[in-house]
Image (cartoon, rainbow, N blue to C red):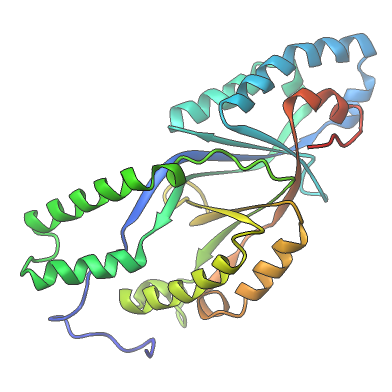
Length: 282
């Protein structure tokens, strides 16, 4: 379908795709102040770690994870999945109260919610409702949409509120869809966007045995529209998956990508080993 082609108003479906929203998510990319840490005596370091370890362990049990980052963008990445923004803020504040926080300098962060895109079921549902004679955004239409989403959210609850995968490697990046003068994702008819997203999703499915992907929505919450978390035991799968996706239409024509952040998972109980300059095992 040509990008400039628009269906006639009598047959046009509403532009807005439905989504299901779940867990609240916060990524924190942190630089550890190693020079200041080395100036602290061994006894004081131990006191700081003894205070921090129970808090970090509790947070891990509440669905947080620690990653040792590679490259200049940071030393640590804290990832928090919670049921609400209030709970996310409590996680932030739990860190700030620690003496350890004096050595943590958050370089950037990303706030979002787990989002399941429903392009295919949206198009199907819109067509069904129009076939029944319902007018978009009418009271009857909105009631049917609400009932459908309620059922889907219950069925998809494990995917909407996931436990952070216990994989060794994480690749996280934010992304947008283009809204420029030449190419604008948001002016395409919903059926065309659905087609492209279907082709895009088929690539990801081929990697399902090797990588766990969690998409989060950030529109209205952060500077990018979506965040992508990829969890795997082999980091090379990130390169293969993302490279192959570069060639599909929705990525090649409409995608914009932010910084990529890669880290290696370790558990809270091993933070003292990390603070000693050693990479713990997962």
